[in-house]
Length: 301
Image (cartoon, rainbow, N blue to C red; front, side, top):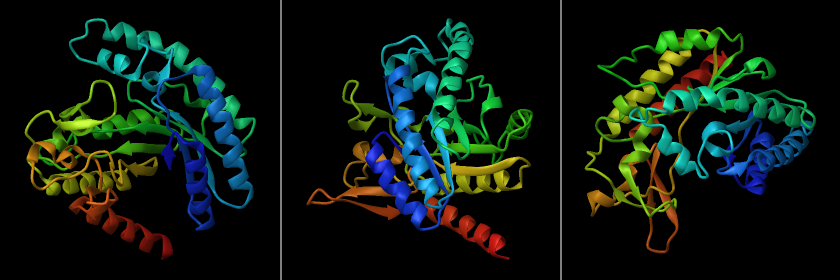
């Protein structure tokens, strides 16, 4: 489970542990500075340790994509300022990415020390592919990974996984996915960029370009990549992004505001007349469920 509300994370993690599930406790915050984030991680570790001592299997994910989401590692006061730097036309981008490596790893060493002082289970971190992380202090190598599908295949996937294996840690794909529109599989990690937002708030207004709903493409992408991960050496665990994007609701009457077309969700979210969101499974939900069922049969055999 992931999010920035500690009480909600604690509640969901507790329930999951009581149900016998392995808990991956993953705080996700935006625009905290390093000191604030370390305090957040200390609280995370205390809560995760209490759950672990009650008998649950718990892994702490010591943050995600820190170069972008933690203030002070890259230039820019806000996440949006930092995100705008990551454009191929930015001539300064190579220098910016090179300069972030040392401060990022210094921060991650402080983060792991903070967590391990309070938590007795395994620790990982959800990295961006461009982050040159020193994995020696972690139990798992975690990466948010969005390979593009071209003509039914994933060019460079085997080479990328081989590069990750060289670090000598079990690999965890902490995020992967695609949205339910035509062309999403060839530009898998960028679907949120198809949405116009209200200034710099998180409130989405409309799609920024015309998107053709294509749930089959999303399901095909997820199914094919799950099969590849399942067969790959060194890949321990994978996490689909995501069950639901509750902020990207679907509408049947207005294609421009059918925000679910840009959503990574396995389900689409519909706003009812009384304001209570409901969700409906998409084809991707069935594709992931079928593979989970097969995996459970193998583990029970």
